[in-house]
Image: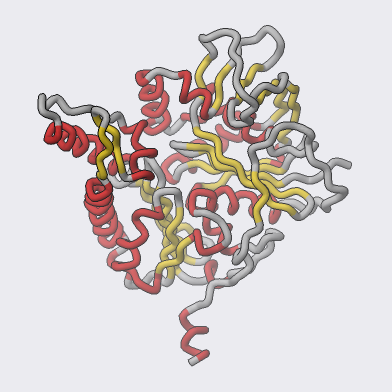
Length: 395
């Protein structure tokens, strides 16, 4: 009997976040969401496991995946891929989606060939396309992966119908908070009260409001209020800034795909000089954050009858202060439950896989290959939500 591996695979706009559990240990992995065909030919890279190549069999076309794909692609190719991913509700039908799913799932197998997998779709795509996605993923997957200087190795696994679960992305975070590390119900209060889940991503901001286990409303803001909106504004502001410090007033254009590093560092290099642009970054975040919270405030009718507002997603971190100022103690931040916010959906999907399976863990086994997944221990993942009634009772 092989090791049961529970996998939560959250393929988002900017990156694929995967969380798995095998023999009581959790692992997480992030791969930049980009796939391009190899047009270079023979290449040699240092032994960096993040440099990933994919092919289905000997002699078939090779593909660059993740970081390597970003480095090898042109700006027009990046733009086309990101645009299709953002605006197409059927992105999962693209070959890039399948390659990302295979590679990210395959690197988490740890010797298992029949993983128990949960995946998610955006709020506005879930109802219409969940069955379509299942048909896309169920079945046998056979391919080869090369990492760094290591030779290609073959990976094979089968997704059985009974071992694949598809839920909406915001619901994944609800299960992250509501289920304990074993996939058992921990926070029953979340299934009794009225709860709004706000999943803020790079390209979309989704809201699902539930009362008990009934989904009352699904709403998507698409790209109007998301981290990409911040980058679009920042790109314009940086062009204006560089023009203002350029003696020739030419300035420099910064495509939004190049901005994550700039946002992280708070500085740019322009014509041989380093400029601190952290205030410009914060100004862009504030403009979008305040507009986002105003929109949510109105859509939720001021949150008067909502007990909890769960904030999740990779973009929830910069927008958290605006939510806290508006919603106060109603706010539950997914990152407070044992893992970074960008992995909350993946962790919830992994727990959901456990909750749907009765498999019993057996002997530990690690795949002997280069790995980029990281073992982690959720520090507070077993802490239940304390309801307002309980807080009052304790005083």
